[in-house]
Length: 419
Ligand code: SAH
Ligand code: SF4
Image (cartoon, rainbow, N blue to C red; front, top):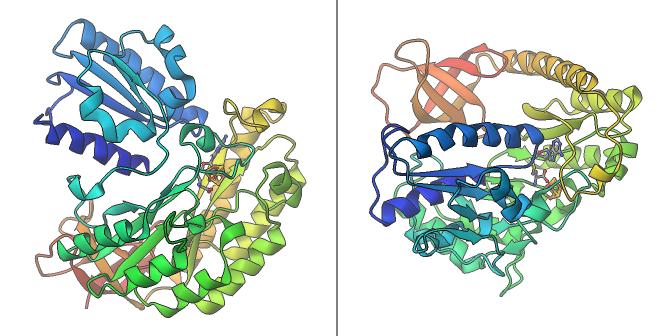
């Protein structure tokens, strides 16, 4: 979602007649899009701002825009520390950038009631898999998470508006799309009440589309209609991002996740049975307050049981306004990092083993461009979102689909030859 927001910011400037600067030193305007989901992301922004300050004092830089979740979360307070920022723009105000820039300085942090941007007017810079917003915001209030405060309440886009946009992208020649929402499986069109299963069905009927990915699904709302829909349509990706966060029921309860580990495993089994080639990824937080070694081991057991194709793991950090921030963060940084490293070690072994089992299989893959190595190789992705680097004797274009036979299964990618 942040990547898409950055594309929108970039596109707003193109529309206003600006040109991209080739170096930071050359730039007259600098827009920084920010994330505040974890402390580390925030720290990066603060150190970047200190660098930028120097450029404004003695260079070409005239205006600084701070966009996204950090200004939303801190409000004007942030100007005390960084008074050289000219514009504070919340995630919901990105669409209004041209208007906001009519003023010398501005604070634009209001939430809009509806998703009101018109994506059809926005110039996409992606070449392979464009992203399309389905819903924004979040009402879940997981106890650790700042998103409901920075992106506001859940709001779904109109069903037909999404459909029109996806059809337009397909007409332009895109064969893959990524549908986006914080809790995408809670999508509900405000006018028709159509849900995600109905939306996916209509999108899957667009014959040009070969791969439709939707993220992120919340395990509590993954219903049977949705499972049935993804099982029927071959062009709905078998890649399902289903964040578990923890394998311990005690911690899941404290996180306000609304499911037990047993519910989660049942859901995975159901999806696996229904959808051919289903492959899962997940987010995990380690070191949530009161997580004991036993709870952490339950997370490891879950990882071993599900055998995800990839995972994202994070050390817990308290976030402003959240419920969990009121509880003492009682696990040391060292302990959190040790748990995190162990979690990645277990997952890496699983990935290496499972990827090795894919040797000799043939995948239809979509070309993303040249691989960084070896010389001349291409980089691509399977429909299940696995990275495949491969050799071909043709000059392939980005977005093209080819068949590749796997010769090597590495930890984070597969290698093969075009067949
Ligand atoms: N909407 C998505 C996730 C959004 S945030 C969902 O419901 O899963 C992305 C990920 O950041 C979360 O899944 C979580 O694993 C992690 N995260 C969120 N808040 C965090 C915190 N305070 N500390 C560490 N990780 C956090
Ligand atoms: Fe955050 Fe939970 Fe909402 Fe995801 S579902 S954005 S983790 S509050």
